[in-house]
Length: 534
Image 1: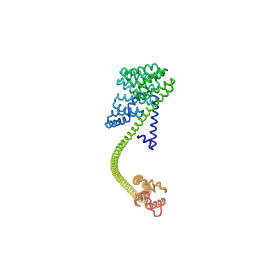
Image 2: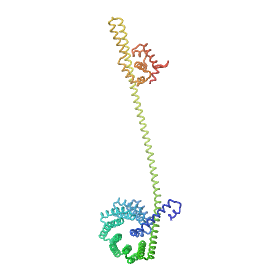
Image 3: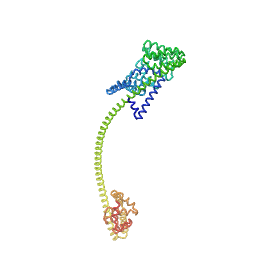
Image 4: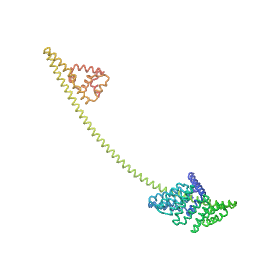
């Protein structure tokens, strides 16, 4: 066997996992033993599934076919059937997982009847997993759907299930009320088999509250209907319950015939669960009658039956878990293979697309970069041309301005010479007036506004020239800077002297003083200093 092979192998993690599954199965079996009456219908349903492993494989194949054909409703029914298999094997978590897959599909197709029936399955699973709040919520939803469809049997079934859930939370008044509602609906629907079941539920509720006369009445009614319908499987549990009521009423000997009858019927119809339950009740009755040998005998007989039941169930659970494991391993391998193929295809397509995009992007970037470079070159050429034109214009303007100043000063010099001649020849009073006029010409030639205009135009051609001179540590004055500006224009000594309104001898002295102030070495020319300024 596959699981036995794994246990015998050296894989400690898998061995630990399987041991946990086995322990969980045993615990579930013990838990069910504490709540026998509730689980009895499920035990009979489970016994009808002779080989859940084979059933699971068959349903799984149907599911695969339905999914391949995109037949969603068939797939939902398969999920529902797989959920039932797990439910009967007490695999409640797996059962809920499959039931909810079916639920999603039924909601998509708005199949209200199948949705309501599936909700009842979900509610029963929550109920047996002892999640009563969740079970009540789901049963209420199925009740609403059955009402909308005017489905009396469905409404009655939901009422009965809600009543059983309230019984588990000790809300007995609500439990009785919902069982009565279920009884009314089943009577209107004429469903005698389910009426008998509700009578049995009402009897159990009253038995729990030790209202034994009422319990006896409802069990009698259930017995009568089962007898009329020849429903002997349901009759076994009812007869056993009658024995319980007599025993709890203190009528120990009167209880024995009912319990023995239940045991014979269980043995006849091979209902091992009810047989074990009858043996357990016989043990209790004989113990109360102080017949301890008989009590011990039936206690051991019942324990042996339940041990056999749960051993077989655990083997079935392990078998179905093994089957599930193998199928899932196979499906996972197929899924991984398909996924890898799809992934590789996607990666190949993605890589091709990315390469194309990168190539297009690179081409676009290169094209835009080339266009940008061309535009920048064009702009630079235009800018340089504009700058060159502007510089040439300013240079011409500066040259013209300089020539105008030179011409003006030359004119003033000639005028001054003529006036000197007139001063020497004229009378004393005329000489005084002419002298004043010469002084005015002298002042005009030195301080004319044209010098300010010259400076403005000069700075437009030679930017920051005067600012750099001002920063020189020699502390140059306005006359020094004016001389340096004229030298910057490469004017001759005669023109510079005319521009400054001085003689060439005075210009030589001014140049000498300026060299000394600048602390220039011998042999170093003023032109070299000016070039160094930029």
